[in-house]
Image (cartoon, rainbow, N blue to C red; front, side):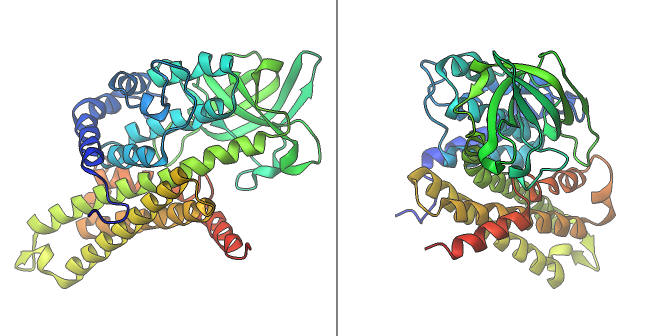
Length: 381
């Protein structure tokens, strides 16, 4: 009998296939991309391979009506992260930007945007964060003012992945002043809309991130996602699905770092023998492996809870994201310590992972926010 949350043979075979095509087909394309900018060739390659359509069941032959299983999403993200964080991030951003349309959009909105995103022909983005509203998403200040036929969006979004190069944005703006989270609405906004400008931001990692400025950007009534005033729920439903998979991304990076450290410790000669014979090194590797396995179990437990509709999905998702991202930071840092200075040289796998591993502890709810969520859930009836 398989252990709880163990993968079945089909899932294991799929994860192995994803890693194989990640190495042979996606990583070379990722390496040709311009750092910090959208790699359309990479996104298209994932569309051709069918990886993006796994995010949107039914997109190929019928109207997609449901999100991918959280377990499938975690498998995809962990497997890709082990071999190419650029490919993993490109896939995740397509899902994050498109899921609100899939979950809350009209039939026309879904038909226009979801198949194009699944094919890799349209780049998606999720535009929630503002300069004064990051973790406190209910404090959004961007306004959506009625203009008779729709709304005019005015304000700024920042640290938006895939900005300013996306073809469409899921944008959250305030339609009711002084109403907190209840006054926020969601819109799907084409990237070429008049009044929408932006700039690329240089960050620690090389992923595409930018700032957007909305100067009276017109949106039609049929570009509202769901009901007016329910945009916060649209955002939270998307984040509930993606939080466990952020943990899967972290687990994939941690596993890649551990694999590199084990290989190095087994071949590097120091003090009369291989590094692995030093107790300080072997114990560090054991600690890294144990934390990764615990994080992986939490991630897939959270994914199973989401897929089965359990009541405690909020707490389990928060635990998975918190522990997995903190673990990944620890493991990558420990792997660098085992390697020494060579791991800090530009272009080394661990140098790359060190830059990529930091952001997941902040985005989609910082670690401190996850602890707050977990504590709050402890006191629920």
